[in-house]
Structure formats: C-alpha cells, structure tokens
Length: 599
Image 1 (tube, rainbow, N blue to C red):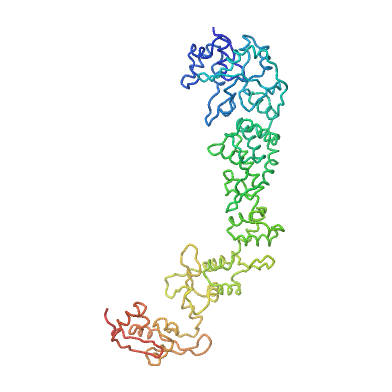
Image 2: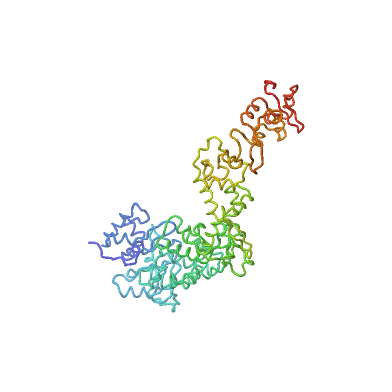
C-alpha cells in the first residue's frame, strides 16, 4: 500500500516532490533517482507523475494540475496564475516563521515535512507574509535539481533555526501586497473590476506601468528595472486604480495634460507612452483576457481628450472620433487649413483666442464639425466649378446671372468667399444629359465648345428648352467638352432668314482658309455664288451657295491650307515655279490643284 502523503491545496508539483523527499528521509537527488522520476523532461513527465502518485497515494490528475508549467514568452504557471520566470525566487528559500509554526501545529508527520511553500513566497516582488503581517525570512538555497526546487530540503537542513525563529517585527503590508498575494495564494481578495479581468502577470505589470506613467519615468522598462523600482512604481499604480475602471479616467486625465507631439495629419504621438506600448505588446499577436476591453477603454478615453479618430490607428484603430483639431479636419475633409478656420469661425465654433493657437491646439466637437462641413461640402468654389464643367470664369458669371447656377453669399466678417452649390452644378449637367437623346454621329452634330455663333448660356438655354438636338459622349463624368449640339439648328436660330443650301461668311472662310476680303473678292469675280437675305440683326446679309463653295474648294486650294501640311521652307520649294490662280492684296493666294506638283 502506498503512503498517504497528500499534496497541499496551493502547493506546486515540483515543491511537493521536494517535500516527499524530506518526508522519506533522503536527499532530493536520491529520491528522484530511486523513483526514476524526471520532471525536467516532457516525455518522461507522465510516467514520473504516475510513479509519484503510486508512492504518495495522490490522484495523478490532481498532481498534474498542480504542476508549474512553462507558458512561453518567459512565463510560468504558479497555482494557476501566469508569472514571469524572472520574478520567481530561485536562489533563496523564503518562509514565514508564523506560517511554519501554524503548519507544525496543524498537521502530523515529521515537523519539517508538515509545512509547505506558499506561492506568494516564491514571488520576488513580495517581501511580507500578508496573513501574519510579518517579513519573510530567507535561507540560502541550492540550485534546482532536475526541474525541482528543493525548498523542503533547505528547511530540513536548517530546522533548528527555522523552528526557533520568531516574527521579525510587524511589517507594513500594503493593499497592493494583500491583493496580489491573496490572489496568487488562491485566497479571497478585495475585488477590483479592472485588475480582476486581467491575467495575474498582466495585472501586476499594469500597476508598474501606470506608476511609471504617473511619475513620468522615461527610463522605465518592465524588463530592465530592478525589483525594488518596479515594486515602488506598482504601489503608486495600484493606489491610483484601487476603484478599478471608475478611477482609470482620473489617472488618464493627469497624463492628458502632459506634452504630446502631433504628426503631419494631426495624429498624436507620445500619448500614454508606457501604457500604449504595454497594450500594443499584449494585443499584437493575440487577445489576452480582459486586455481588449482595457485597450478599448483607453482608446475611447483618448478620443475624448485628443483629436484622434479611427483612421489614426491609435491602439489598432476603431472607436468614434469625439474631437477635431484644425489639422485633422483639414486632412479628413480635404480643405485648406485657412478655409477650415474660416468655415468654423463663421459658424461660431472657434475659441476666442483661435488666432493665437496652432492648428493642432484648437479642439472642437467632431459632431459639430461634421455638421458644418457637411453643409460646406455641398458648395463648390469657382475653381472647382471650372474644373468640373470645363468653362471659363466669365461663363460661370453668365450662368449665375441666367439663374442656371446657384451662388451662396460671402461672409465678409470671416473673409469667407462666396461659393456655388454642388446641387446646382451637378443638377445643370444632369438636366442637359436628360435632354441628350440625339445620335452623336448624326450630320451637323458639333461640339458645344466649337460653336461660335452663340455663347454657352444661350445654347444651354435652348438645350433645356428642348429647341435643339443634343447628344453627350459616354464618358465617366461628362462636362461641356463632351456635349454635342445640332449646328444647323444653331445656325437657324442665329440666321432665321438664311436661305436653304447656303452658308454664312464664317463657314466659307473656315473651309477655304482665306480672309473675308478674299471671299468677297471671289464672289465679285463670280467664282462663288451669293444670295442676299435677312441677317441676325435684321439687315441684308450675303449668304454663299454651299454647292459653289464646295466646287471652288475642289478646284482651288489656299497657300494657308498647304502650309498646314508642309513647313514654310519646304512649301516654298514645293511651290517654286507655280503661278497662283488668285493673288489678293491681303496676302491670300490660291492655287489650282491641277497645277501643283505631284509630290
């Protein structure tokens, strides 16, 4: 039958092995060798636990659950709590003389095997027994043997000293020590909704981080700082968040007033520096229990104190923007900073001393900025209208005078220029496109920008009235360059008395590439037939028979037309020896096509 030697509720498996060795009256190495147990090798661990269970009579599942397992990233489980391996005491055996005396009085067996090492005694940041309010005593300890720390062997070797030691005075046990020692030892502890939601090591580190942030300790490093320094900062941090999440806004509010640096986009740097790095490191590759909620809380608080938004990626982004600075509004709404100031000033959103503050120092409620900018975004500047419609400033003015575009009033108090409503600009194009049912390739269809007989406003009015055919080239976002109108209809509007089969003077000059005087001279010579009719101003005007113009163009060509296809020097060589059929005083010369060289 195996010996009935139970493991204590909070005792780790490795320390229980040491206590088994002392109870058997042998050294730990000899005990492990006799039992053939190897707790330092994962492939032998199950066999070792089974052997220990057979020797002690303890449930193997209970023994396995009590093992201090390496968790990775420098951590190890201790009584089910994750702690940093660097924080475990491995060079001394610490104990509370009052706890040892109570164990001896409460249990049976060899006196040195009745007591066991509490988990909090193994943590380097705790120096007192919170139960008896007495400092922990220390004994020199050998190194661990095949994965087991021989705490009980050290106690046995120094039993004469341990059994006679009394408490070394009354220790000043802090609430920080009570909370974390009780939590590590599995005892009832005072609730803290913030720390309770975090893993043990994370909660302990958070106290040090908050303490360093409140002390504005730029040299703080959780890895490099001494135990004493981390303990000092953890006391400050724990006291500041004793009420959990209810006290956290006040802590962050103290840091809000510290110096921070704004980037180009208005995003901030150096905000809660230690806490920011702490949260990012624990959520970069996964989410720890409770850490995600803490990160969201800090992020949302930062957005109430600084002009931060989801796009700034603060603590991995998310959240809702609460404040805007001039700079962040400039970036988000793509407006010049001066324009943003003018618009916000015109709506009474700027502080009285706004002129003395930089673009990053002015903070305004984001909802108010959004409402104002939504209205402002419904307007367009003259430059934007020019780019959108591809028309000149004079044409824009004519459209406003014709009530085809709506213009807002300027605000002289804030030097706010007038603008054009986006609805009227886009609405004008939509109304034109609705009328565009004609075929763009139909005879007489000409680009609106090439029409010279009427201005843009007159043509647009005819389009909207449905009096002329119009077509629009199918492009992504059409403008006036893509509008085609029936030129014959335009001509009929301008020259209501124009006889059929005739064209006005400017059409003849465009086709022949000669001056007006030259056309009139050709008409007087009988080369081009003319018909007299009523012009646009009610006076008699000569119109030119289209058939005679086309026949003349087939027979003759002007020097100006030839110059379009040849350089000046090459043209002189080409026309050398060719006599013009017509030569006028204004320099216009026409050649018979049959007289030109065939090259």
